Length: 220
Image (tube, rainbow, N blue to C red):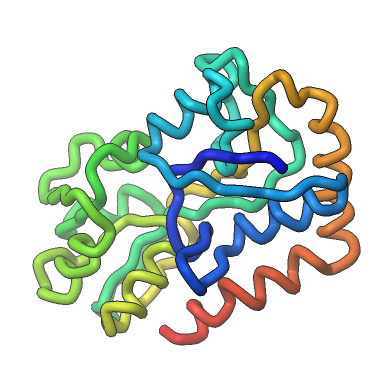
């Protein structure tokens, strides 16, 4: 049994009675190498610190490069998925293909997301909030033209709030996301990467995606 920390939430990580996509991917990959999975949901920074300290066995879901600042972590090199940051809107007349197209719009995002902060640097009409629920609330109240958020998290929160939104394509950012293990589990890195690759080739990845994420897109 491995315990992996994460700051991620639904629909990527499970809630009581509701399995999450990334968690189920990791659980199946670990099953294929003979291990079980337990997930510890923690604040984002605490999850990294605990994984690096070996308190947990690794971090479930991170972008590339964290091993530079957390030297005890080893990346499993096969991505779990690509994480898309997209604009969500309720307006039919908005079309966004890049950051520059947001310049005349009121935009909001959850504070602390460094990738989004960089993309919106210098934006004139910007609001930040502390939770995804507050972000979708701004959109529902007409207090923002566009909110920037992880695609699946945004659609999940909007669906639970009963707010119909439109996803602006293409994504503003697409980031491959990886599992990290504490270096004491270095021997598992190659077998887990092979298991994840096999899950793409045998259709397991697509089946889980269609089960957990595709319904969110269809509901909008």
